[in-house]
Length: 314
Image 1 (cartoon, rainbow, N blue to C red):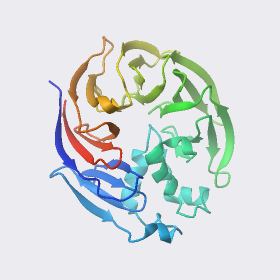
Image 2 (image 1 turned 180 degrees about the vertical axis):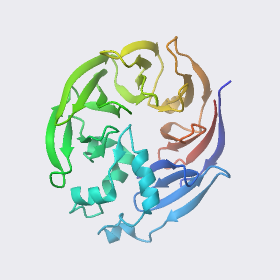
Image 3 (image 1 turned 45 degrees about the vertical axis):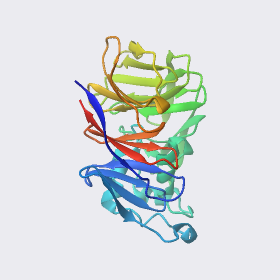
Image 4 (image 1 turned 135 degrees about the horizontal axis):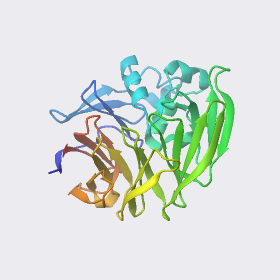
């Protein structure tokens, strides 16, 4: 039987309100930061270790971020990426952002805090490089200058969620009107766009299972599973439940962030969906980052609340 249990409650160790985090398999923990500083939240035993501490990083300004992460750390973060996309190399961002005062990797930190709609170029698994706003997606060619624009696709509503397919040249995005669209990405072209579903409520999260066979959507009052492989995704299961974000733990289990309603485990199925286990953290959940093996979740709360580690037994 699946279970969620709190392992440890910890204080957020860094100043400021900027809070970013990602899982580091090589360090066996979660790297957290406030842009200027970085710390490691260890899983076993639970604790916080300082990685980078700057006395006055914001006064330095010029290239303040570029010497923070080792090549190994940044390489791991780059391939882990966000929303199915991968970040570019430091050298590529140097070419794309030559005049960035804070350093070329600063936009990566910003994306970890607020998402990909800040136009940071990212790579799809198929190799295409795109940048995203809440109104359009742009296809780029990095071989033709620092960042040449190849094509733009105007989105059919303000974007609220996005995900890249792990093995096919297609992007799925959701809108604040509750619609889900697919956007094909081909050499030198974006489109066509196709409407996948009308959920009727804001789409907060989109994920694709590791095998690429299912699209999972969550939003204000629903979680839905779509089978991929046909001409259009086919809705196979739906549950009326609040969902702020979705985390695919393995081929069978999802972790749902329900904000003030806590954390829930949900089995991936084409049968009627049900919530299998629940846990209520000490306050409303802001963001969740899961370990690569799906066994541990790091929960971030809004400042000044701290962080909590949860064990996931699947």
